[in-house]
Amino acid sequence: MIRFKFSQSADSGTAWRMRHFAALLILVASSCVDAVDFGTDLQVHGFASQGFVKTSDNSFFGDSESGSFDFTELGVNASYKATPSVLLSGQLLSRNAGDMYNGSLTVDYALVDWNLSNSHERSYGVLVGRIKNTLGLYNDTRDVAFTRPSIFLPQQVYFDSVRNLFLSADGMHLYGRFYSDLGQLAMNVGVGTNPVDDNVEISYLGTDFGGRLDSQGAAFIARAEYETLDGRWRLGLSAAKASLAFDAAPTDPIGSGDIDFVYWVASAQYNAERWSLTAEYMQEPVEFQAFGPLVDGRDSTVLGYYLQASYLVRSDVELIARYAEGYADKDDRDGTRQSAMTGGLVPPYAFYRKDWMLGLRWDVTPNFMLRAEYQWNDGTWTLSRRENPDPAATVKDWDMFSLLASYRF
Image 1 (cartoon, one colour):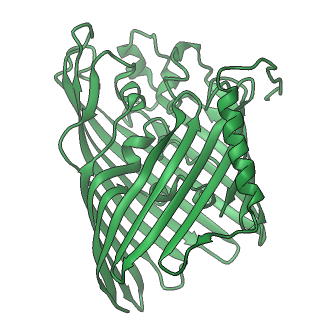
Image 2 (image 1 turned 135 degrees about the vertical axis):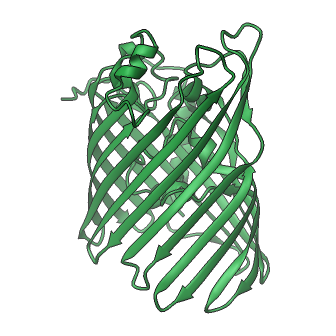
Image 3 (image 1 turned 120 degrees about the vertical axis):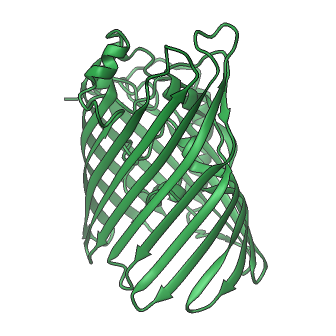
């Protein structure tokens, strides 16, 4: 069980957290405003979320063993209807997440949506710019806490440790929506380049080498999603294919090489009046080439899935339960083979993770939400190597308690 013991010492991030907490208070103080509306053509919206994480062992978004407030999301987005068929939209995001993301202001998305045709039977068009990748049920809306099913998305499918790699791409998407008495079919096909940061290099190569890991060529993204007319069933299949190239530094113990992967997700959701069931299944075949003996031969097929149930106790209170499993290699589910490849320096439980989660959501107002969740974990796969640099020092069985307050306007 978790013993709540908080450190009283200040750290270098205290001033940063205070500034962002002040920004959160300013946004909450403006709760009488649903949105900044400059007329029918221009609208501005925003959100602010502050989290707290306490773990029995291991680090998750900061020094969570002592209790961490190092999880803050602040965002402002705007959309402008330039013409009846052209929409301009974008979002600025500041995200603090332990040692992985430092709260720097980034362009979350910025795009031109040109609708080429819009009727009762169909709608299709093109997106150009920085575009959220339509992967799974939640990737393209994962930054807004109100649209997530829980404080943290299931890490076995939606990896926070390589979040930026899958979140968006700079390029072009074609989309189509087709409507009939049987329901709606939505399709997206896109091409672009994905941003790569140090978290991606650490996750795929194990550490931050002196060289540079970057996107290689174009990435391809696609999703097909079907929803019944009554909204009860939602089915989807999505995928992304991309390559990364590593340019080794002279002092690196590995050579320059390439990483190729295909990430795909099958999704299903059933919605009743007061409850819903959601399941997603993911695989990601990964190939390493030309790095040398320390890396080559680590080809694997990553696997993850979860089953989630939610129930509305009343219109503003929701209960959620979820079970999730994930493996660094579906053919080595206990991690023994991958551990042996490291000479036993990385324990077997670092290559898998299974967890149960129970949570509660309370919509205090339509614009202000509180969440509380408890999670029981077996294994440490998907934990950030940046926050847990020594896998042998982690603990196999660990618990996590988390809180989140979120406001939107």
